[in-house]
Length: 255
Image 1: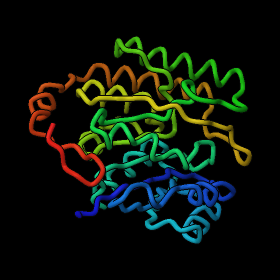
Image 2 (image 1 turned 120 degrees about the vertical axis):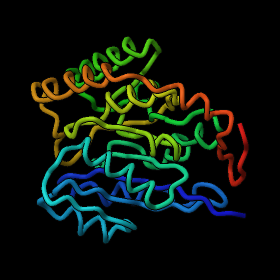
Image 3 (image 1 turned 180 degrees about the vertical axis):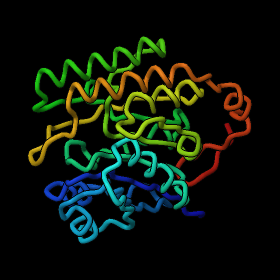
């Protein structure tokens, strides 16, 4: 049986108190015939994030010389998955808020050929400890994406997402500060199928989020505007879909 590969990547910035716990929670046996590798994208950390991640079992570490932003780290994570030959990629935040043990559930729609892009949805699942202003902010930005895409979206800011090989190759994150909104807009407007999977979420115990509301608005809203002004390229993807092969377990199945 041909072995296939899942690459889990963690964008990380000064997460020395959390990253080892996340890596320990990542299941290494997800399905027969599948190999799992873990990649840490270190976004210019000034603490011991890299050393602790390596000791915790990260298979690959990509280090930025300086802090470039979460969007840049996710872009590099997707590129690293492609370089490593991943059939499926999964991104999970390094802050230990997201349930790494639910990785098989989050990527199941890709395994089964129903989706090309998945998001672990906190708002379809369970949320513990999220402050009211953060909850309202998440809802507002998710509603904006839903309106722009004319479809129901539950959790547009999730930090746990799965990608098919083709989605990783064609994803285009147009700014370095963040990725959450523009990545979803970009992939769905290209014609990729998205599915949300309920997850259990608990707010971090150590450290704090990089997000500052005014800076977030000032960076994200112009990026959304820029993404929506670009022409959608669904035609090529739709024409290729009949020829595309999806992965079910360890078997290739033509759609």
